[in-house]
Image: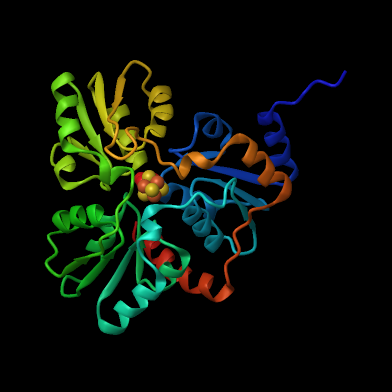
Length: 309
Ligand code: 13P
Ligand code: SF4
């Protein structure tokens, strides 16, 4: 009788057959992270996508991240487990809106967070991620006016950190981080007075004001691993718990449910499953297809960002 292969075994076989690399964001389910060649924040995954040598990238994250991998690898196939894995920040800002802004303010520098569509990236001057946003803004001459889009909370944080005066901020938000409430965090802090607080910069200003550390998903993990404290309140998506528990097994991590879903999970990230991952490697779809002209234009601000950070 033939032994039944597990989904994980099927995926590993298909990965070999397709000469594929499997990239996973920290917010993916643990079983997906366990199979990945690289796990990271959006900057690290963009870098990994650029270094890659094989034929296929299976991107376990959300659509804008897979688009970024495609822009960096126009000749390779980039597939995703679920085409519907989007992002509320991407939805908050369209290319038409950015073009209209550009017509009105042609001299402004448009800095776009990587959580944007490839069409918005193509209209931007430079991109940034949560890890390098301050560095990117500091690379722009101080006399220039900046439009930072689309995340309002990251924008306010960067404005404060850089001390920029001429700094306009789009009003998009992340449905996960923007609904973390300072009130609930204060309650958790009272319960765990020894805990350090680490927060993602997409959180509201009042939450960031209470944090001991602010950084990207990978930066939060690095902080918790290297900091000599027994417990941490982690203000980001709870998928990071997987790496945290593996890399700092003796420490305790608390996640605060947000006001929207009473959880701390990104519903888009959690659309990906092992089954869908197996299917996308087998069928080579859904695959990212982008018109060459848009790819060429989006690559310019992306390369600028990678050169700065
Ligand atoms: P990172 O750049 O920290 O991975 O953030 C991406 C993201 O979507 C956060 O919600
Ligand atoms: Fe987008 Fe927020 Fe989900 Fe990140 S956590 S992918 S910003 S909706």
